[in-house]
Length: 361
Figure 1: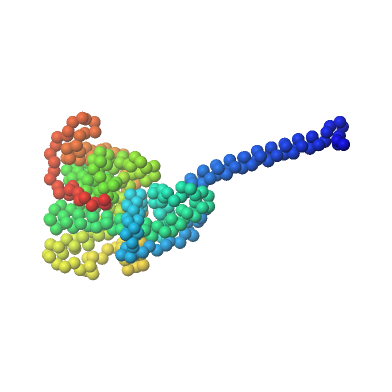
Figure 2: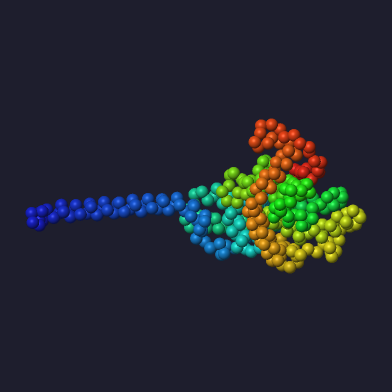
């Protein structure tokens, strides 16, 4: 017997309600599935900048000594070194804590885009990235120390070599004048020569060819030169690079004079000599892991970077740099930016513009 209520088949009414409920559930399930896909798609971006794993909790795995590495491990270490030189060095000169090292390694990883993460999302992606950082942060630390030491050795070889050859060498005060763009650099012959040497030789030796080779330094001013393929840290010559260059002179000028005198006199180098002591580096003070630079040296670097950043904003700087670039283009017989012909001008005879093939790769 059919059950009715007010003349309506209640069985049909119940089945209709069930179908409506099933339709609602199916719709909700579809929405949930779509939301899951959306979250999975966004996970790659969001976890890259806001990983769920706290960076301060990541434990850095100590890398092997280079002599103990396999061929493949040494190759990978070189890959990390090249990325540090390319990605980190222009904007990061010192890394003196575990957390800073971890943060720097995330930057290197994001630039390298490891393929092993392409199928991971959510927590698995965060964990995979964190493990990659833990395994490679010590390579990044060592790479940054090596790049910084190499930059210092380039400048030392340049300045000591010129002193031994009895050539003109800029004073520490003149290097600071270049970094802070003093107006006489565009007004006197001595100033023009000084700034051209700073621009064309010293900056390349401290930052490397990757960031200041001829296609940059002979075609763009310091303020204009950027890497077109980068949004972050795009500047070729950062205020930090100029600050570090000057800091090397402030730290080492006395030592470099002593080294040159030893070479001139044919004496064996004595690293314990009082003139070899420097104010900002002490590898026996517990800082060797981070390159030996003291807190005082790092503080001085921050002060100089701020001072140079402010100096670059002065009204006369744009014209000063444009004029220096134009003189360099004439000197090197390069087509002018605004004219389709060769520049004719007398080249000055300076050995310092000669480059070595291994200058930062």
